[in-house]
Image (cartoon, rainbow over all chains, first blue to last red):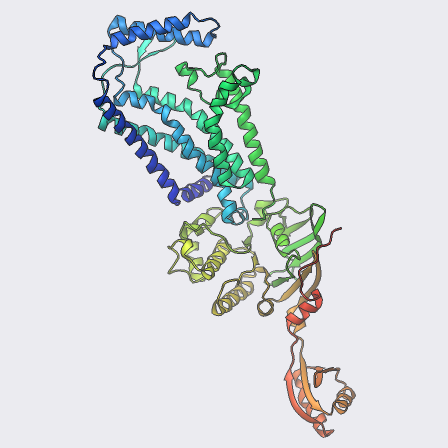
Amino acid sequence: MLKLIQNEWMKLWNKKITWIMVILLVFIVFAGLGITKWMNSTGNQDIDESWQENTQAELASINLMMEEPGLSETQIDNYEEQIAIAEHRLENDIAPLEYASMQQQVLDTHMMMSLVTLLTVIVAASIVAAEFSQGTIKMLLTRPVKRWKILTSKYITVLLFAVLLTVILLISTALAGLIFLGIGEGTLLTWTGTEVAEASFWLEALKLAALKFSSIWMISTFAFMLGTVFRSSSLAIGLSIFLMFTGVQAVFFLQNYEIVKYYLFTHTDLTQFYTGNFLVPDITISMSLLVLAIYFLVFMAISYWTFGKRDVTA
Amino acid sequence: MAEQAIVQIKNLSKTIGSKKIIKNLNLDLHKGEITGFLGPNGAGKTTTIRMMVGLMKPTDGEVWIDGQSVQGDFEGSIRKVGVIVENPEMYKYMSGYKNLLHFSRMHKGVPKKRIDEVVKQVGMQNRINEKVGSYSLGMRQRLGLAQALLHDPKFLILDEPTNGLDPAGIREFRIYLQKIAKENGVAIFVSSHLLSEIELLCDRIAIIQNGELINIKNVNELQKSRYYIQAEPLELVGEVLTGAGFPAVLHDNGYLVDSGAEHIPGAINLLVGAGARIFAVQPYRETLESQFLEMTGGGEIAQAHTK
């Protein structure tokens, strides 16, 4: 299996498009942070509030939200944590991270990860489909290696590529942040479950990225399935990217119906359980994990079944 | 040829929709023997080959390779097979060497040294590090052969292997295949449209039409010793030849005689003695092409009939 993955990895990096994607990713990160620096130095000069005033305002708005009726338990827990952290800051005079700093930007990297999804979808959709369109599939399948092993090596390669892109994203954000913004002042605080404590921004950023990875994983698996079933990378890429952009919007349309709880995109982003910005109020992490697992199994079953059974006439 | 068959095709059938594409095909292939696979377009050559290498699943029947069934133990059987199905499509964005490295990793026990060896055998040393996209069709065929030979297969399946090779390349290719069949005992199964090429290359020829094997012949059987004698007057010549015990058939302006070379001078003496005027005596070989067309009824595309 290791040799098969090695093969897929070699094919991936011998294509120009792969390198272009990586360069594009790094370029966008640098450009984005460059713009942040420029905006920070030109605008906002007259707004001169101290962090204490900001925190107080934040605290007031959370308290206001707490009074709304029909909050779920997860939401209340989350608001209480935010209140505890804010109060701790004010009592002990601990400033939060500056927005235009390397630390805060690395922490927010998970918000840039849809870029990674976009690029991974392209690879996931074409890794099987391209073998059919190039005609190389018949060379690949007339080897003493069962079809499911070949498919597995391709799938693992896609996931490795997604992990690598995420790491590249984190590192280039840190580098661009250091160059443009500097490391920045302030301290990051988190709720450990019993008390408020200082946290490492690296560790927090990694946690968030790992949670966000569930979304990349699911959409890539979907694209992988489409590429395997339809043997056309353009169709698989198009459909996956379309769903990636419209899928989350559809959550808002479905909000008032029971079906939203079983809808894939209600659950793809697991960072919602960490940051408290829920798409749909009364979902729990165990429910999300179960729904994701079922979708995953269905996508995989369809991919393996079609790839294993199909007569190759390409 | 009495040795046990390396490849046995047993009752192979394929039905797609309601159409029976391959009907109960049976064929044995032997060690060291080159078998040609001929048939008009649409007769089922490619489908048969795809079932032999596991790209398609037969509706019925099995293919056995050296004691293992392709349908039962895919990895165990296909390990012994080298394949070129139609044009050898390679990864165009990688060098020839990386392509070979890629395929070698899919077999057990193919060291890097073996890649260099095969590259040398097919004469690709000078271009092997260039991208396959820059290769000519002939070079791709060579690379295709190289990947099929990487793991030292006992059985080689080639679909249209000389397509795109120049005459010198075809000759080199033929000599090379005959050499590995003879020296390494590899069984080779070649499908081709180039009848003259098949005739020169193969020991045995299997002809398929409308999904059925209609004939299996040894090439030396086709090439049994015959002579064409052109002489006058025809009646006299016929009488003399049959009188002397030569089976003679009228052909053009003379007779075809089934006979070994050693009897020909005697026949000429008889004819001269009887006063016949002889214009030509030459060895006669019916071409495979005329036999093929005769057997398949003109070589039109197989009629689409449903059962």
